[in-house]
Structure formats: C-alpha cells, structure tokens
Length: 198
Image 1: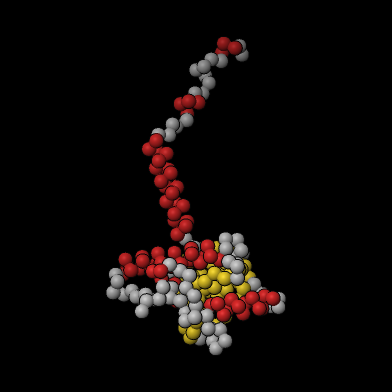
Image 2: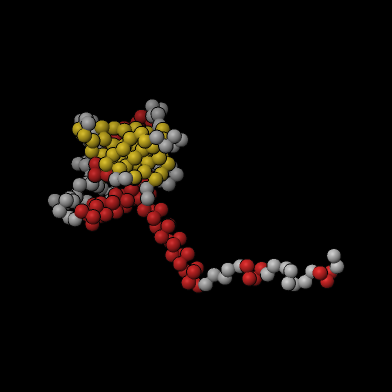
C-alpha cells in the first residue's frame, strides 16, 4: 500500500474517544469517594491477636488488674495467642479466625461495658458482661499494627454510633445508658459523654 492510502480519516481520533470530565462529574466522584472513606471508618474490623480472656473475680477486679496479670504471664512465657479478626457486625462484637473466617465468639454490643488501652499502647482490654456463667470478662488483644489506643477510640466510636442508630430507630423510651460504662476500679479513658452518670 502506498502512503497515500493512509490518511487522517483512517486513523482513530483519540480526542473524540476520550470522555472529558466536567468539574461537576469530578466533584461527584470525589463526593462518592469521600462517603466510601467515611463508611470504611465507621466499620470496625481489625486483625489482632487474642491473648487471653479473664473473668473478673476476687483477685481481678478491673481491666487494669487483668493487664497486670497479663504482663506477669507474658514475662513467664505463658501466653498462647491466636490471630483473629475483631469486628462489629450485626449488632455484635465478633471474633473470627483469620484464615477460615469461622466465628469463634460473639457478644451483643449491649454487653460491652468498656475498653481500655494498656501496656504501652500494645494491648486492648474489652470488658463484656456475660450471662453464662454470669459475670464480667475482659478480653485482651495484642494490637501492634495500629496501636491499642487507636482501636479503643475506633471501637467506642462505632459503639456510640450503633447506640445512636438504635435510639433513633426505636426512640428513647426503649434505650437506656447500657453500654460503655466502666467497671468499678477501671479508669475511664473515653469521652466525657460516656463517663458514669450518677
């Protein structure tokens, strides 16, 4: 074929094949992206290591006592941890196996009594009210990736949001301040709105 057979008309016009984004379409895409980011921040799903669950009793009266006992056991090399996914799903705080995704344990959000970061921001202690046997348990998680304080703050935020959603859905007459009250002897590190009320 001669050079004359190829002219501009046979070449695809790239300028016509590209869609030019308008300011409004860029704005809307950014807005959708922002909403996606906010939704992801509203979700709670983190890879942690479950170290131990302790039941409060005579010698263990608070999450701080449990953290102290954990430190002692760690120094003795007596902790057997397991990597888990800690997540809030369907009104429950759920522990899942990292590989199989099998649910290991679940607690209703209303049973979560509080959370504390300890041991140099490496351990998250979550206090839950249990029914069988009755009493309070403290679940201890190693949180080296994000830090225990970050997870504590994130979990409390999600719990507050879920509680607000329930109040807005069911009205105030069914709700009471059930979740996020510290146990006697626990120091409260949450926001003032979550502090015990007299």
